[in-house]
Image (cartoon, rainbow, N blue to C red; front, side, top):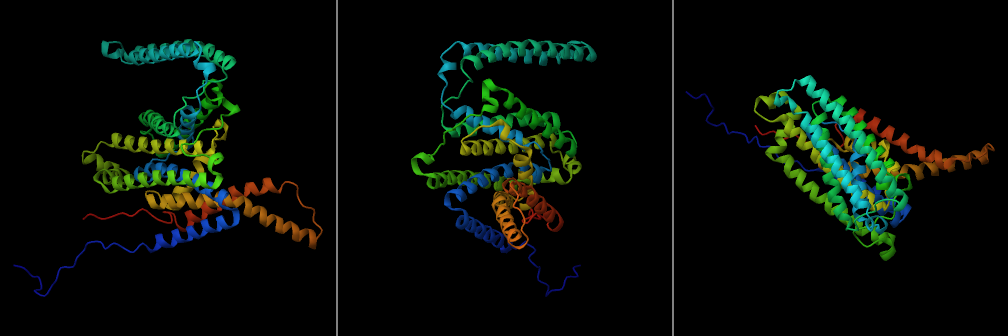
Length: 437
C-alpha cells in the first residue's frame, strides 16, 4: 500500500538555531559608539548617559510588551513615568516634621476617608438597577451624587491643602530607601493602568492612543498643580540614592555603581520577559494579537489577557520612571514631556524591533546615545561652519548657536525614524516567530 521509495530518508525539519551574526554586529557597533563617547566626553558624562539609557531601556521594555506582544499602542508613557518619579520622591525624601508634627495629617486623612466613602456611595448608586430601579433613573442618581459629592470633597480638600501649604510647605516624604519608591511606583502605575485598561482596552488602537495620551496629560497636570503634595513647579530635590552618592565616591564611581544596579534590574526583567514570551502564555498573547477572532473561538479570555499585558507594561514604566527620577535626584512635574518620555521611547522600540526584548534594549541605548550626542556634534559642526564663513566670507557668527544645536536633536531623531520605517519597518532586530508545527 505504501508508495514510498525504500531508499527515502525523512529529513529533519527541526529549525536550526542560527548564528546570531546580526546581533553581534549591531552590538559591536554599539560598543564602539559607547567607547567613542567615553573618549570624547569623559567617563563621568558618559556613565551618566548610560545610566539614563538603562532607565529608558526599562521604559522601552514596558512599551514593547504592550505594543510588540499584544498590539496595544500606548501613547501615554509619560504619565506612568511621572507616577514612578512621584513615588520615588514621596518615599525617599526625608520626613517633614512641620507637617507630621501637627494635626494636619489627621485632617487630611479624614478628608481622604470621606472621599473613599463618596466613591463607594457612587459605586453603590450604579448598582441600584439590581433593586428594581430603572436604568435611566439609576444613571441619573449616580451622576447627581457624583457631582454633589465631588464638590463637597474638593471643597474640604482645598481647605486642608491650603493649610498644609501655608504652614508646612508640602507633606514631605517618608524617609525610606529609594528602592521602596520604585516598587510602589510600579504598583501605582499598574493600578492606574488597570483602571485605564478596564475603560479603554475595548477601543480601537487609534482611540486607545488618544485616550492614553489624554490620561497622561491629566496625571501631569495633577502633579504639577498639587503644590501641597509635590511642591508643583518649585520641584523637590535632592532625592536620595539607594547607593552611595557622588559626594561620597565622586561622580564617575557613584554613577558606575548606580549603572550596575540598573543593569541587574534589566537582566532580571529580560530573563522574566523572555521566559514569559516563550511560554504558552506568551504564545497565547501573540495569538490574540495576530488573530483575535480565532483566539476567542478557541476559548481564550481576550479581555483578561489584554488587561494583563497592559498592566504589566505600566508596571515596568513605573519602575523605570522611579529609577530615572532617583538618578536625576530631582522631581519636576513640568520636566515630563511627551517628546522626551513618550515619543523617544516609541522610537527606541521601533528601531530595536517591537516584540524583541534584546532589540528593544539595543534600540534604547542606541537612540539615547544619538539623542544626547546630537547636540554637541551639531554645535561642533556649526562652529566649524562659522569659522570657515568668518575666514572666507566675513560672516558674522550667530549668537544663539547653543539653542540651535539643541534643536538638532529633533531633526536627527526625525531623520532616524524616517529611515528606519523606510528600510527596516520591523526594526533592526525583528521579532523572531518560531513555528511549532
